[in-house]
Length: 140
Image (cartoon, rainbow, N blue to C red):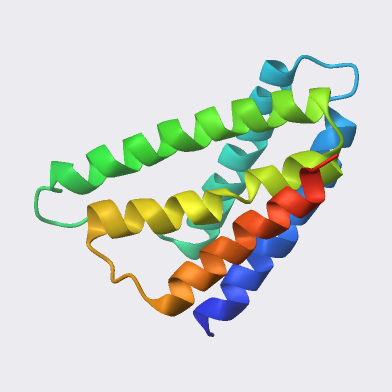
C-alpha cells in the first residue's frame, strides 16, 4: 500500500477527531477528555500489537536514541492533545481544526532545520498555501 493512502486515512480520521472531540468536550473538563482519549488509544494499540504478534523486541540491546525520541514524540503528542481539546472547548471545531493543521507548516520548517530536508519551490508554495488557507478560514 502507498504511504499516500495511509496519509489520507490519517487526514480523514483527524477530521473526525475534531468533530467527535468537539462533541466530547461538551460538559467535561478538557484534561479529563484527553485522558479518556489516551486510554482508548492505549487499549487500541495494545490490541493491534497483540493481534499482529508484534511484541518482539530486537535480540540485541535496544539503542536508547530511538526510545528517547519516541518519548519526546509522545510528550509532544500529549501536549498537542491537551491544547487541542482546550481550544475545542473555547471555539468552533471549524476554527480550531484549520489552526491545528498549521502543524503541517511547523513540520516543514522543523524538518528543514533539524533533519536537513531540502527546501524546494514546491515546499515553499505548499506551506504558504496552508498558511493562507488557515488565515482565510479564521479571519473574522
